[in-house]
Image 1: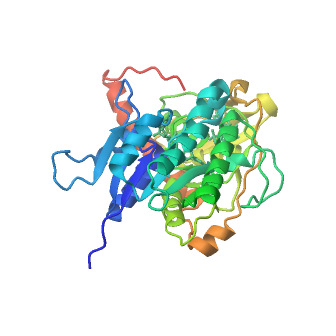
Image 2 (image 1 turned 30 degrees about the horizontal axis):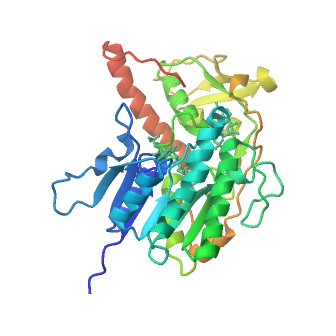
Image 3 (image 1 turned 90 degrees about the vertical axis):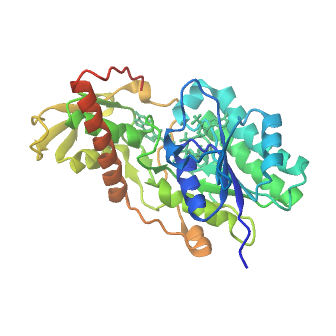
Length: 374
Ligand code: NDP
Ligand code: GDP
């Protein structure tokens, strides 16, 4: 007997994780619906390869305009789509920006989750529709204990994390109160060539590539001491899927169990290009200086200062150390990441190098004029 096709609805489909998850679910023969926001410029770069002509009879990838701040829109889409699984990945996802837009962040990241859960309830889908909530290691915030597991207390340290804490608990509450198959994935930082350009890893790999190619002089960063447990987004969307395939709804930490300082990520990224960087000085005076350039394609003299600290990137309250304990996801989900940090850095640097090689051709021939507000 042929299994009926499952239907998934992804919020945040235009984001890093949305793009990888859509790839994964389509490969598993799902019908994938996604909610995208209206924007004044195209915002579908990450999923353009999935486009299907809406006139095709067997269209399996369908986008809807919508927003997590609009209940009526969400109810209408869910009613129309009747999803078996909802993956709530939509969010204002940048910690630093959440200090500038705290109310909007609470609305989209906190109440947005409530709106989806209420839509499931109002539409009588509590027995049919499972929901995955994109929770975050930022919930742990001020270090209480390490490594952080499902039972480590939360102490959020940003408007983003506080909004996500509401979303975490309302997901648990709707599971307990109404029997909805609702789960939190507490995902530690995960990156990829599709990562937003202002998150620290992508900012570093882009800058390393541009500096090597002579398109940028220096990389300005904030707190170089912060420690993060970085994995690859491709591995992490696999865990999201597995969480919704279990017999009972539960919450899971998804992490590699390895933590690395921002400073070390910088070294690894430059080293990928044959550029050896040493850090000297302290605090806001710390600098990253080239000691060796082993690639004849790049003209970087020893002594060139390529990294500096700009306190404008410091956060009012910081999360110093994240390191996850993935024991539960390894044993219950059978989940194990395929990428290690070195593999992640290599892939990101290679992708950004290719991107900026192309940009350099356009720039050198006078076809590219761009201002960047990063
Ligand atoms: P991105 O920032 O790449 O993507 C966020 C997505 O949410 C984008 O599609 C964005 O749309 C959409 N979005 C933003 N605001 C709204 C809104 N009001 N209504 C509807 N959609 C909205 O994030 P990631 O893919 O990296 O992360 C996915 C989720 O996982 C997020 O919820 C994030 O907070 C969470 N998370 C991420 C971690 C990570 O390390 N990546 C770690 C733990 C949790 P647009 O493209 O138009 O901006
Ligand atoms: P976050 O863990 O979700 O906040 O992910 P980010 O990639 O934005 O930041 C990871 C860590 O890098 C945080 O501790 C930041 O303070 C630190 N960091 C240092 N310099 C920068 C920077 O220039 N940009 C960003 N985004 N983070 C930085």
